[in-house]
Length: 377
Image 1: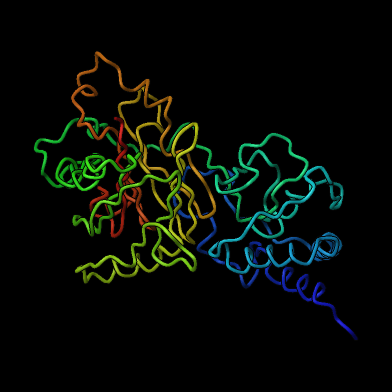
Image 2: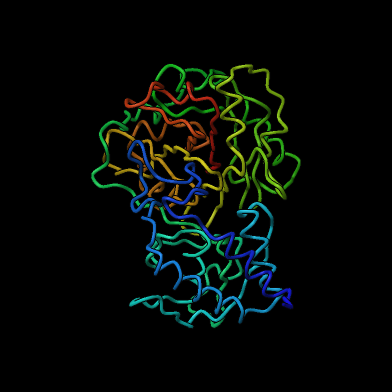
């Protein structure tokens, strides 16, 4: 029987669909579980019955066969690389609905459901990545349906779990400018300035484009490499990315021989994407394992404690909120007025969390972690 290239692409796409809970090929690293985190509605749908699976396959085949061959190649590239390869937008009509059983899905939502999140129910659970052509557009006729141009929106738990609370010691300025991170001795956020911050300040002195943040990479209590100054709106931070440009942690020279550090370093994989957007700074977890984040703007401004938030693979979280940050900088507040000129920081740990429910009490005990230092000038 003669088989066309289009039908071959469709079959490869169906074989590359997102595994559901119970499938032998399911990647347990991308699933929710274990300690409670900040992402509500975590991935983990039950395995559909054979009738539903057959209906979904028939519907997916019928939709894919209507898509142009070049567009199928774009979709296949994104799906097979799991977002690791740069793939262009897949622009399709956004107002076309497809019916699955008793439920109707918009075409983009159905493709996101098939190829990334089988438990996805509504578009309100999604956030479009800033790299996408459809980002910021309201009701366009053609919508990008590339599933790896989307992320799941991380919602914060309310009330938060008590085990992850920390005192707001990080708001106090460090005792000495050239000291090690404050988190080495306390639970607080660390400032690398002014010792390391001078690396990026030199850019402004030479008249180059000013940075909006700098990133420091730490392995336990040791900073590895120089501070990475960020001028572009978004930055990929990764260990191994097929077509990655940005801050490659795999190229840094580290003397740490700890087996745990080496294991976690290898699990960073595609890492995270840090993007500066109109409402704040977002962090997208591109890896196959959870990341853990602590930021002042993720919590109630009146709270005396901070939370460590768990972000699952494929999820995005607004790690730094510009509006909340402005309200936190109260002119009569001694702690805020005495902050170093680097402003706020956000701490991100790969794979391993810290807090009262973990063996690690402070982030400086985590194998691999980041410190994002914002420039408020």
